Length: 386
Image (cartoon, rainbow, N blue to C red; front, side):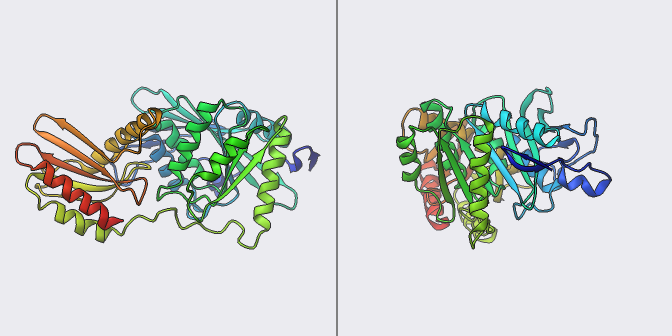
């Protein structure tokens, strides 16, 4: 057992046997988009570096990976996730923790199945603490700043007990963009993390005020930590102190029931069935934009001619997130509706203002449909789901 600036830490015991599989990353996985259930094939090459080959949404791949590899997915346990906007502090902290405990940092490489291109690297350090919880500290090193990369970070944060957004080394535009992305992520029905901390610079009073001004979900506790935090040990002690204060409270890390629970599938299916009565509507769906998951869907066409609604839902969610990002960049209000025309086909997307992250998708036959009427019906359906 070591007494250091990081607190009382001990070396991680060696793993052995299949009973320890749940504690680590799952083996190499192949996720086929649209397949149910997802196909997962074990092929361990390195105990500390593994691969996840994915098609479709990387964020959804992480969610499915956790669903297969973690029995405690419904209740986050001892999981702390770092969102490092500057990409400097989190890797240094995980390395320092690994060096102190003598336990290597585990890495999960997300690779695009067709090209083997690396989309992100998820890092994890396991920290044993004497007389305290064993903490698993996660960080996602993404290769870009687009919606797909943000999804990977959100998929890790949403199941943690504590998520920390490190803004003290980031420039102002990057900090504000990260703040808006996190605020959008906590509205999704997949969010379960009860405590969200923002690590701010010593002179970050204005940024702290902007954090507090945002309308966060009532069940989510927002914390701010202002510097100066010099070095990894100071950052770790601040996060560990927050963890212990929260754990000591009567509510502790109570189970989160979701920022916005998705509407019951039966109600959604009934409303979508009414939408199908409009002339020219071929199919429609209610979609959770967090990972492009279809909550409910209805089609007016026979099985052989019906569009692939799950695939269309996923593709549309990516397009919607890109449009929302563009709107924020230009200082415009949130996107309410998107219309896409391709030959004889048309897609209408309607966001649900009262349930951020959810949207309605309608696929139309352009020659037969009354677009104005369908838009009116989409607004009616939105109100009913609100």
